Length: 114
Image (cartoon, rainbow, N blue to C red):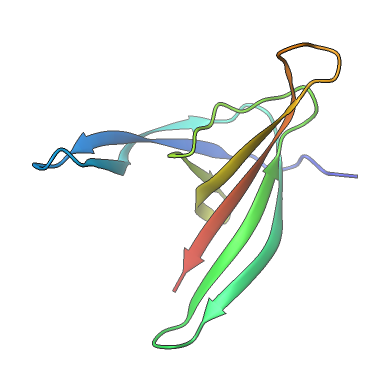
């Protein structure tokens, strides 16, 4: 059974362009929105690199309750008790009896420290 016990926020970045017209995402100036529904946030794994410095990459998965979608795009960040996490992928499972509806969402997240 999955426990939906975690409050998160979505950080939607401000899109800026540099002098070469490349898009840059400014998360400091972005919009921070509370996600109204509790979610499940579970660690999936981690990897480390010890060549020149200690770097730990953690992978997490966020799941919404059945019948709940989340306003999230791939350029957003998810903020939780663990800090800001990069969105690596978003899966929206179709609802079995509501055509065009979402049963739940699963989001792969990554956090890098070190």
